[in-house]
Length: 373
Image 1 (cartoon, rainbow, N blue to C red):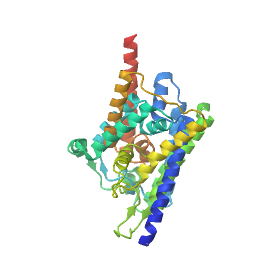
Image 2: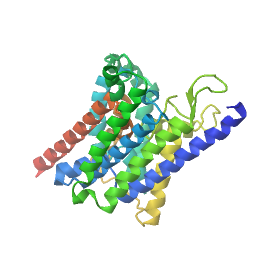
Image 3: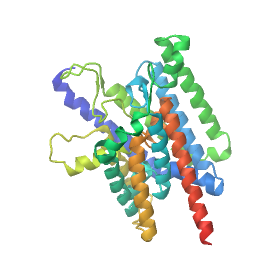
Image 4: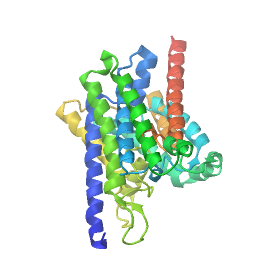
């Protein structure tokens, strides 16, 4: 590629990412796609409808990602989730913090963006506090504590931490790793899809739209970053690179660190070194997509805090999500859908911890409610 062609390709990557995020926001607003809501429905009323939607999205994303790996279009090792360094303690503690926080804040990071677009002022406060907490954990005082504490407890694997790479030595290397990814991705993904649609509650229009739509968007985001935005040799650095990413790795949808980078871009807009990235345009795209859908369906509503306790819960939840999301290397979308689609071991740990943290917070809320009666 010639250097003169680089700006055009970067614009293509950014616009493609923005359109995908726009669709994500619209679908999430229309179908009430929400990980916290899915867990809460099960704990509070025993309703599995939204969880089946979420599982369907995971299955579709997993199939899409690993089909592309099998075709040789992308590689799991190029993502931030599947590297050889397994931060198991960070994944665990960060996931617990994020899961507990998303219950206090009435939704995860992606749901916060969806609610911002629909006029929820509580979500706007959560967005700002989450972004500040995440930035402090990425580069500030909390980052120093993180790097010198939980991140020191890790396991360095000989190769990557995705299941196909971990299992490949038993069967061989090279093309067999791609084949194993295809087999595992299709097998696990189809199992998740079948579980989701097995019962009638998993075959409603909203569940199918949310599940297939969100899952396909995650897979498409991997293609945009890992295929369209991939350069085997950057014309300036002569190194392999992935365009318009903050992590310098292949990225898909995720909404904790990108919120921090979005605030940084907005605050320091006049600084020429602050440029748009996939994460930033995805954050803005989800808000815009949700807003357009809310206006189209006449569900745009201004909503504020109900009192001091409501405010405190959302503030604490936002901090827990910001710190925990960075520690866990992702949120319910970043680790839960994007990371899990790569079959990375750390993503399994983080997702399990997020769900455990959410269940713990929900049980705590129920206990407090019963105690006050």
